[in-house]
Image (cartoon, rainbow, N blue to C red):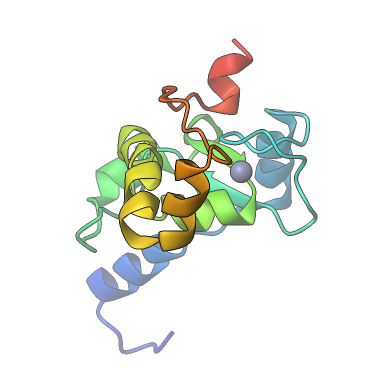
Length: 138
Ligand SMILES: [Zn+2]
């Protein structure tokens, strides 16, 4: 970062991509013994540290520095597989749950293949609630 960058801008940029120490990353990994916090898949070596409550809002804005310190800690970090973390993006836990629950209807509307497979009984949506791996482990 440039030395003549205003401190406020420097702080916002740092918050946008916070550092996670090896020790912190290991503590996050151990929360699930190597499973994705959300889907339960065994994590690959490229797993992500997800902020359960995002440090950036869905509208692209940044949270205040006060919130940042509250949110950037092991309690708010979860080990996530790459697909879950990328799909969750800046959503909250409940926003992520809603986003997943819309997928059957979205796929039905957008995919003739899905509708054909459903019509012939090859796909049967369950109507189940979205339950994350960490919720099943309680
Ligand atoms: Zn996952």
